[in-house]
Image (cartoon, rainbow, N blue to C red; front, side):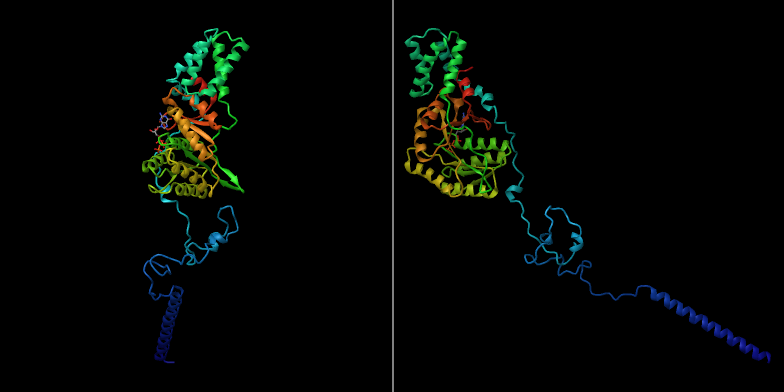
Amino acid sequence: MSSNLWFWIALAVVVVLVVALVVGLVVARRRKISLTEPERVEEAKPKGGGYQAGGDIALAPGGTEEHPAGERTEVDGQPGVGDDAAVPRDAPRRTIVDVGLPDEAEAAPAEEIDEIEPASGRMERLRGRLAKSRSAFGQSLLGLLGAGDLDEDSWQEIEDTLLVADLGAATTTEVVDKLRAELSTRGVRTSEEARALLREVLVEALATDGDRAVRALPHTVDGTKRPAVVLVAGVNGTGKTTTTGKLARVLVAQGRQVLLGAADTFRAAAADQLETWANRVGAEVVRGKEGADPAAVAFDAVKRGVEAGVDAVLVDTAGRLHTKTGLMDELGKVKRVVEKQAEVDEVLLVLDATTGQNGLTQARVFAEVVDVTGIVLTKLDGTAKGGIVFQVQRELGVPVKLVGLGEGPDHLAPFEAGAFVDALLGS
Ligand SMILES: Nc1nc2c(ncn2[C@@H]2O[C@H](COP(=O)(O)OP(=O)(O)OP(=O)(O)O)[C@@H](O)[C@H]2O)c(=O)[nH]1
């Protein structure tokens, strides 16, 4: 072979090798490219990311589908295993569920709530308020009794002292007779013994078969909790609204939930006054427009109290002059209407102790219209005539349950005969 031929053969081999090398590189490069993500064609995407929603915020029709929580079988309120897996957080089928929001009134920051003094032992603590103007009564009686042998004049003086203190004729006679008998039977010699006997006889005269507890705690009817319903009645200015507020404080201090009904629609200020009391203890108040039917307001208050599951509904009724028969009848109507909602557990008659005999006349009239179950004697701090307690209780056969001993929010005390007599005697 000629050297020319060898040259051409070598050239051909080189060309073939170069071509093979180029082809190999191209193929290898193609393979490498096929491993990378293909360049995607940009789809027309809604603005705001990848949410497949019909608008800016994912919304779903409400009301038609049950919330998945409703399908859960567990009842302890804890999340169950697989809850999120079953219904992904962003699943388009997730619906909006209505949940109850607290009322605006409830949500509103409560007014400053007062510190409330415990009710137990209040009578004892407030004794000073009672005794203030009363020591003359005690001193005069004890002076007479401790003086040794008593003649008829002395007994007459004792009787007068009791009458002046508003004990009333019947109680006075009873007390004097008892004292005369016991003084000689027991051979009382010292003033200490005389004082002890007087205390005993007066406490006995205040004894009652009735329970002094205020029926203001809830009870169960057919297995359901029902609030206690308390009507507070009395003549204008005796202290009904103040007493209702003070009583609410006592209940709230014991952890009870209270609703106040402002059924005194004759005086707009009375409802405002009650509302102020309610705000101070954090209680709800139901009131009507000025001049509204008191029975309707009382009805609404009790209805609301039952629905809200409170422990007690205290209804402050309008102060009526007992001489106005029609208005008094209305109090009867309030009670009858309320009873369509719930049983009235307590009718508290508020009497102003400073009005003496007049208070007793009022009490008689009220007792004819409604079944009074308890008496609240207010303003005992402002009178030397605490003896009205004996008369009222005796006359109505209803126990004095509470006493008002001042205008202060905690100046309401449970009535305790012993503490009261001690205060009366100024000891
Ligand atoms: N000193 C003293 N004042 C009292 C007592 N209870 C009430 N008061 C005052 O008596 C006045 C009348 O009280 P209210 O509670 O408004 O009387 P009310 O019976 O509701 O009167 P109306 O709303 O007009 O029917 C107020 O100035 C009370 O502060 C008490 O126990 N002692």
